[in-house]
Length: 326
Image (cartoon, rainbow, N blue to C red; front, side, top):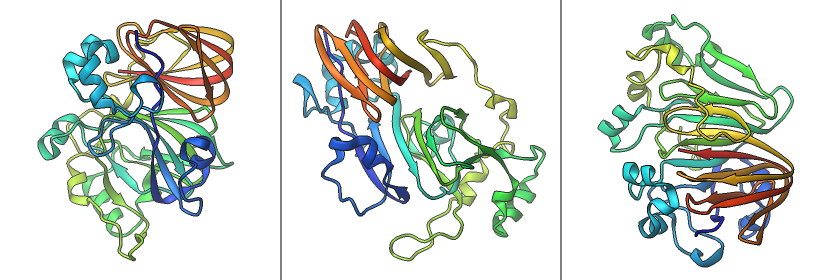
């Protein structure tokens, strides 16, 4: 029987990043330079070049791909192993948006496979923290916009004004399917659950420059074949199903790629991953995971992975976790 696994966060510098990830991750990122801006913490990943490494227990030092190869369905669940093999299906991370992010879109599975031999990218955002008045942008205000109107708006640097602006508050959750144009405004700390993909088509970036003084690359032409409503996909497809496959806590987002629930622990709760795995992301408070008579401390910013064969765990304390699985 396997145990609650903790992975080392893979923290990335971003020009739009800040200091919140350093604060949330604490000792786990204590060696990082404090004068740099960090925009992302990849807490669970099997993206090539960024595969998560175990930080605790007997598997310490092994990466996610290696332990899937050894434990197969015992780790990720038999159906997941049959479907994905050594590739883990999800990428889970924090985004510290100290400045606004580019307007972007992600391809679906078919186009991602054709162009990049990759999965597509559908994702969910959970607002872990935000400043007053913070907002995100999801799709167009006018769903009848034409390709020509969109192309003109990009050329004239006025695309942002055509997007649907949504003010956010702590605890909100949003579903962003592939093909939906989107952006994150400044002042948001977001927990992101998504397909195992790092594909992004950047279409507008406020004429922002990189560290070398160059305008950041845009992918305007590639994006045109992806963006709803310019594709053949129905716009209504952004309404995700509500089939709660976890059955624990409150269902926040559910689709064929992932299921995300929020569990508020106040005292004691029981968990058993069963036929799949559970990825736990603590977004508030703290306490312990009790497994096989051993206690694993958990606090805001921590991530744990509960293997399919880990059996029953007890969550004890006062904290909130996001529970994700394929």
